[in-house]
Length: 445
Image (cartoon, rainbow, N blue to C red; front, side, top):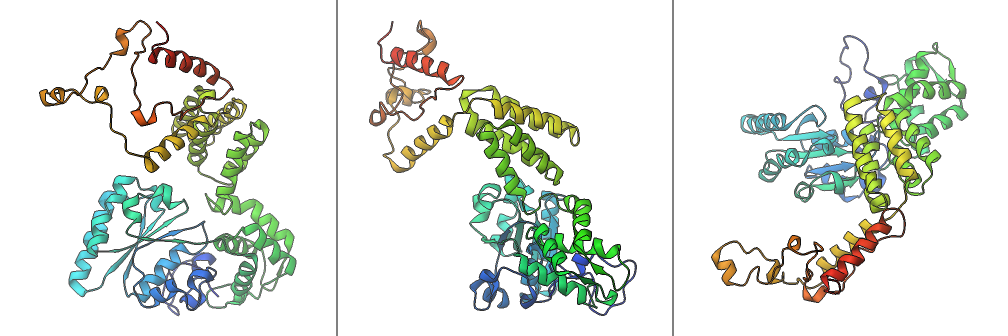
């Protein structure tokens, strides 16, 4: 049983220099050796059949680290006899995309072999960069396989998603990790078998639990323990715990609990629990999470959960985003913590998200109301002849700065999308809205 990725060298070849890491050596050579994801790749499953027939097409592989995204791309390329071209969205830009596609076209023309372009962390590309793939996927210049740890619905543009099948991959279960660790210990060709190490049952169970569904993390820990052993030693639970304390937090910048930690931070902020919010922020940063992920979550909280109860919240959150970009870590922890404390202590209101949700539902599910003539653009003679702008009142010309003029379509008059809450600044907004409504309805002079 082996792990995930591309073998560094052909089996049996003489190696030069140090061995690759254990997690690099322990990699599957076939779908039968691939660990986990039986609901997608088990016998008789449609994705497995498509891969084996070489017709899997372009995919987006979505899942946490260490579940086999890179390896699945490699196996797809192998079965389809495609050249595997790895590509990092962190290190590359549109120019690299064009160069890789140009090489793929040349390869196709010279020897008739297609190319699978594997884009790691594809969510790091912005919309314009993602759009660069579209014409080449459509023309068949490349087969695109993107890997992402973030929800594709939010991180990948719709045009690209419509041309790719999204494949969700799940963390491995403890039993699978136990089997993997034991296999690595006895594998004499790619694993640690030549060293005749063993592991206690409680130690391998603890390792599987601490790995959190991440096979790469499990093997990194195993290799760290092995480095402190002499041949023939037994690895015990204390060695596993020590190895994780010293290595695993640094191993992966967005481990299996990445989204759970951000969720705990968000929900603690929403519930106005300052102490819990500071704790979950510290926990995320100590686990190696990208501070920008936490900063983006603060912006979401400011708009979704604090809203207009404290309009300063969004400014504080955006200031934290800028400060983290400017300072980096460790100094960036301070503006992040400052923003977390402010947001947690702020009054809360979800009226903003309720308002836009209600308005969006009215747009999508209701009649498409005509724009009132007096609100239409009156530039140009033809527009004026059609009555555009007729009856429009310039608000600044009125004493109150609010004209007695209807702005909603006739069919929506009286509809209340935004309903201000009763906390914080929204009390003042409610008073202003009431006064403005009276002026628009001509009930006040």
